[in-house]
Length: 482
Image (cartoon, rainbow, N blue to C red; front, side, top):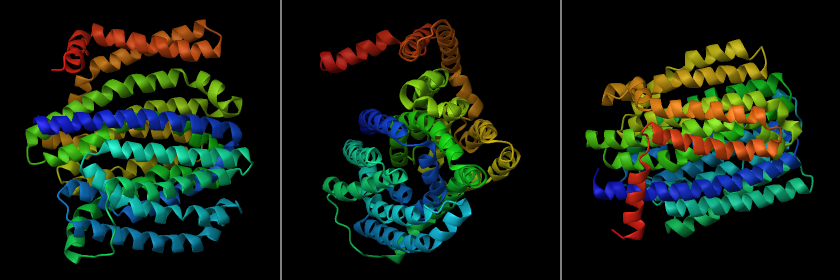
């Protein structure tokens, strides 16, 4: 790996790690406070809108963010063209959502959704404003600035959301949190990019970027619909309270999984895009990124699963206990999510968004079959189906990268076998500890410390991490100054 690329990758990973731990730490505190102040039905109400907002957000982006990052050497005209398209699209979609609001409210039999839909739709315009700003920082692997912006906007929105929840605004506090984050992003991002947007459009630039981005747009819309269709049906066929449990069960595992992907995965895409013409170089980065992610995601999600009950009782209170089994299942599912994303990212980085699109579309029959079976049964059955689907999709997502680079799912699992074994042994030890300890605080914090310690020991025992070599490298770099 070239020195400059390695330096960018390590620097990006470092700042991504700093951002993720700060950001997710703040997000965790904010979500815990909101979960204590609000009712499950409040989260369920906003969850009912998530599918519509997610689909429309995909249209606003249009695949142009990844198109800009993948192209890398973008002109001012490229940026202005994307900005113009994003803003015009967002304005049109807000109008659509305004008139669709009564129908959405009627579909879910929730009158409050009419005004909520119209107000929260404004976030589409605010988010469209920062797409190019975010792309510019990503292209330059400036994750330090991204970290600062994300931390500031999360803090601002958290304060707004908690204040409104404390004053008794219910679901509107979640709306306020969403809008304040989007608005603060619109104000803060330009301070770091120093880029002034202009309404300039180039048909040539549009054709080039849309040629790549259109395939991602189709895939993103499909993914959003498939990933949120269960939310849609739960909101339609079950209560907002049930949807609230479903939403919260997925929230913590997804947050932890996103931390891990965010630390390593988001850096890998722009870096791999830079070396896309050097297949071996890209493969080296791809393998290292997958291994580093597996090293973190398997133990963390395993620990999350075995400590879920004490976590809910301590931080969310007993009113959220009905989501326990669903949270544990999502912990299993989210072990594979960042690894699957990394497998498809290598296709996008190499410019094969067409393969990415067709591979994602090929999974539709499986998803629809599982949903058709589980939706009539129960909300918990839906989560069981989603977990099984996620594991199967990991193998599907690794198939084409395996054909292109000779590194398929079975090769990957073989490389991670001792990581998986270490995580399983750690989980067994922590479960035994929990059975012997009655105090939930000791279960959670003691189990967490025990889990980390035993996993570190098994990593040493199986030769996954050479702590002496790692110590020596850190000493040479930071103590001796080499």
